[in-house]
Amino acid sequence: MAEHSFPEVQGGGSLILAWQVRNKRILVVGGGEVAAGRILNVLNADAKVTVVSPRAGLNPEVAHRIERGQVTYHDRKFEPSDLDDADMVLTAVDDPEASSQIWRLCKERRIPANIADVPPECDFYFGSVHRDGPLQIMVSTNGNGPKLANIVRRQIAANLPENIGDAIKKVGMLRRKLRKVAPAIEEGPKRMQWMSKVCESWSLEDLVEMDEQDMERLLGFYKPGIVPSFEEIRLGDESGVWRFDGSFGWSVVC
Image (cartoon, rainbow, N blue to C red; front, side, top):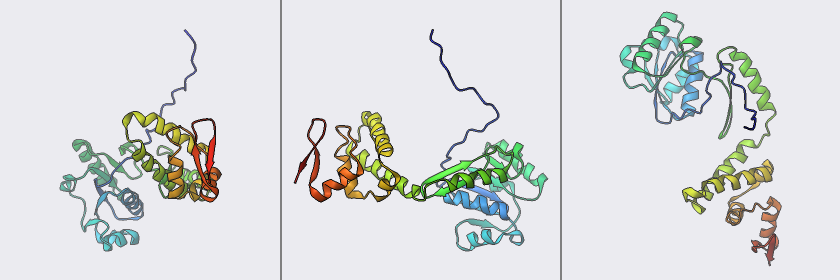
């Protein structure tokens, strides 16, 4: 039997996922600075957020979210009944005993929870996130060093092209158009392969500059599985129309 080389298992990590919480009901217990960050994270993910915290302890940002009606607010301490409709719970309060009580109640009800600054009482962690439009990059230290995660995240972000978020938006638009051109399930592998060729062949600058006309011209080359350069697509607009002639090149119709 031929020998194979496979990656070594490295235990002690977390399964990093993009958790879809759109329209999910998320309970945030606490109204301080940490809670403000948690609230923004889940609002960015289009969740329905309920905040439970005495008004006297509200962070200015949390108060702003409440005043704008971005969250549902209860001016009081946590009550067990707050968990009745919760799909997820995030706590950020300066009371270890109260936090542990909430954690135990969540475990009983099988509600995923994050207890701020208490890694053993967390079903998941919040990492340090860089956001540029649809692009999200998370750095996690698995609860070992949140500040260090922030430093690493900033170094990564500093080395990313400024226009990468716009490029990703255009790629997403092209993918949606391609699905309309080739909607069949069996076309899936070919669609993925062709989109990979586009992303590898075109520069980020090309993808940012690409408009809907360029997309329509480019999609005309999907069936033969060809990816012309951005210059060839644009040249077709100025001096003729590039058409695939069934051979190994293109013909120009002026």
